[in-house]
Image (cartoon, rainbow, N blue to C red; front, side, top):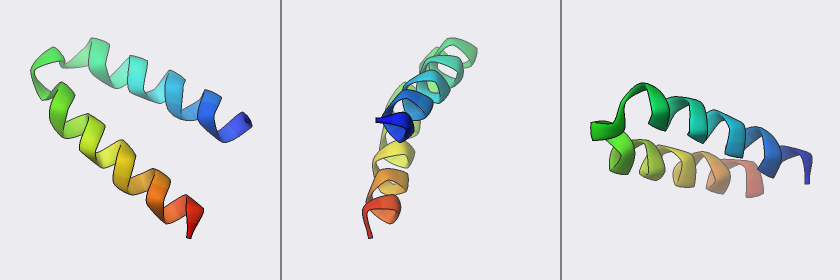
Length: 38
């Protein structure tokens, strides 16, 4: 899906920019995906 691809690119960019915040970014992406599914 297009949204999954976009989120994948975003997550890669964010994780590469700040490795230490990886877990926090992952949680934000999960909550964002929940909002999209609602």
